[in-house]
Image 1 (cartoon, rainbow over the protein chains, first blue to last red):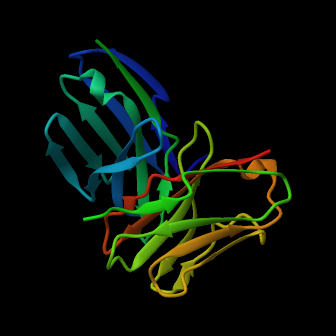
Image 2: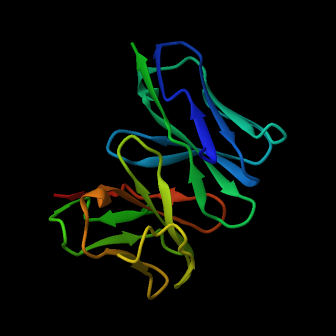
Length: 109
Length: 111
């Protein structure tokens, strides 16, 4: 079993729909990162969480440390949100990231 | 300012050849990371530098892989006797603290 698991692997939504991506991890962490990867490979950091909730524009990330679970929500989704979203755990010891397999999101107009 | 840059953007080589992949981190970033991403998967950690030294190289798959950062800035990932299974996107990231900034990656194809 991978240390970081994401679901779903693929998600298709209609423009305007609310999207939720889930991430579960099995190790102790110091932070949980959400990243966005567009076709062509570039990765952009969206959020870094160690507790609670963060919001940036239409994106919301939450984390429940006790349940070892994080969610990324996209409100009022738009076709430009189409990308792969990756969660990554930074372990309590060390700085390297352990990545989930990614969720491929397609938002149709 | 400039972000993390990686060269080349694409590299096609033949099985058994030697390749070097270069990463230019953001100026002043002391930490540098190499990751490998196979098609349809999330990135996997290879090696992490703090300054000039490799602080954690536990992700290097075997002794064909080696990385250096001689002056604490630019890093080179070296792969000897390449195999078809080495084909992937090799990502570099740099940081000064907790957030990592990623380069665009080098797509390596081993024929």
